[in-house]
Structures are given as structure tokens and as C-alpha cells.
Image (cartoon, rainbow, N blue to C red; front, side, top):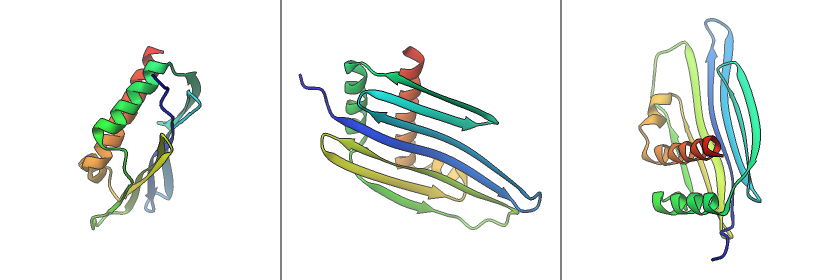
Length: 140
């Protein structure tokens, strides 16, 4: 059985601009898969962590199946904003691309509140992919 060709770059970002306190905070998680190497960078809660692992054939197959079963093999673009009276400005994003067997799917989701993306079905699918990646890292 041939090895599926999968590559991706995924960025989860949360940015807070508190104009009242004159503070800016950011949290980012970046995942890159290229040539069976999974590179991840976690920059959140005042901690930074980065590492690279080489995935096995079964791990690549698991990711491929997940992408197909959840419908992430399509491009998605959404800007979800609600009006809030708040001195703190939020920007929450999930963006990146997935290349699966020569097809490329882009996604760009943004919102002005974490709760909005937490309730979006497409964002939930991408976050479940991230949960799978965390699981692969833990079991490596």
C-alpha cells in the first residue's frame, strides 16, 4: 500500500490587545508536517516549546483517514465577529493549509472572541486534528 502524500502547516493563534492596561498578549501553536517529520512550536502561557518527531507509516495513515473522515479535505474561509463593548480586543485565528495527494486545501478562520471559534463546526474539526497530533506526540 503506497504511502499517502501529506504535508501541512497549521497555526492556532490568540492575540489580546488590552488598550486600557496598554498590554498585548499572544499565544500560538504551530504544527508543520513535511516528509514524515512533525514539527511543533507551542508558545503559550509564558512558555515556549519546540520539537520535531519522525512519524511512522501508520501515523501518516491515521492523519490521512482523519482528514478525509472529518471533511478537512476542502478549503474553508470564515470571519466570525460579534459586536462587543469591551476595552480588550481579541483576535483568534486558525489558518494554514493541508496538501493531501497533490491537492491543496487552505483554511483561514478568524474571530474576535475565542467562544465564537469554540462553537464553530469547522474550527472544531481542525482542533480535533490538533488533539490527534498531541496524541501522536505523547505516544511517540
